[in-house]
Image 1 (tube, rainbow, N blue to C red):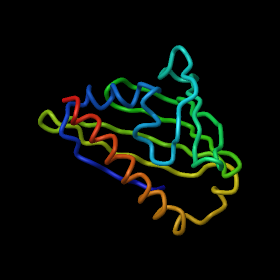
Image 2 (cartoon, rainbow, N blue to C red):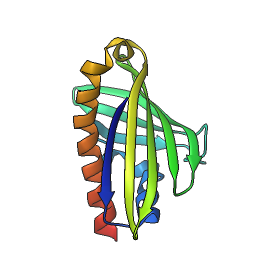
Image 3 (cartoon, rainbow, N blue to C red):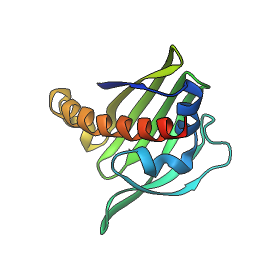
Image 4 (cartoon, rainbow, N blue to C red):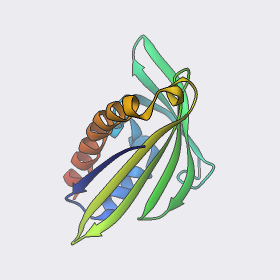
Length: 144
C-alpha cells in the first residue's frame, strides 16, 4: 500500500471541507480532468461522484464511491478508472496544533493494476499522491 503524509497549514475542518466537496475533486486529484456529477448525499457511504481521468482525447469517464466516512477524521473511497482497474484510497486526518496532519493511503484492488507487484506500483502511486496532497494543501491553505 502506498502511503504519503503532509502537514497542511490549515485546520482539519478546512481540509475536510475540500475532501468532502465532490465538485473540487478535479482541482486537487492528480490525473482527474473534470467532475461530471456529484450525487446528492455525497460524502455519505454509498454515494458517488462521477469524474473523468486523463488528457483529451484519452479520457476515461468513471466514478468514485465513498466506502466509509467519519467527519473530520477519516474518508475511504473506492476509485475507479477502468480499464486500468479500481483502487482504495484512505485519508486520515489528525489535528496538530491547529494544522492538519493528513495521511493518504492507496492500493490497487481490482483489475490489471492490482496484478502489478506493490514494489513496482507503490512508488508510482506515491509520486502521484505527493502531487495530490500538494494541490490539496494549496487549496486548503489559500482558504485559511
